[in-house]
Length: 179
Image (cartoon, rainbow, N blue to C red):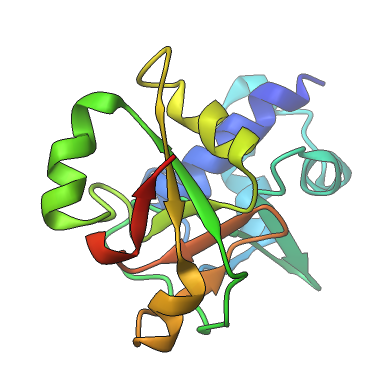
């Protein structure tokens, strides 16, 4: 079983195009795991897929993208579906990080961090992870240091994605320093 390919297919189905798999996502992002399995079985390459394979990806994905609860599964972050996935606000760590291409810095200074095509702004708990993400668009990305505790105290909502990723609706530029 190619678990990397399966993880990417699960991400696509649960985060970006559930309608292509005829999946019904509830307001918290949950899908019946049997429905996910059944929809994957429609493709020949996944005809041998079993729930244990899906669970293996959930438990062993290094980025902790998914969560299983009884007979349901969901992606924890990264959604681009039009339906807003509801999350409970939580107080973030004092500092969070965001890696970005240097060409976006002037826009960020002016408008802050906005989700763009996603539902939330993605923030990392450590600078290494933020820079790794930033390298997707720039070989030498800028590191943004987010004063998340002050932003929280001023009313900006944060949501825990997983142990390494935090989400926010928006980060005003006054809470962003360039590292």
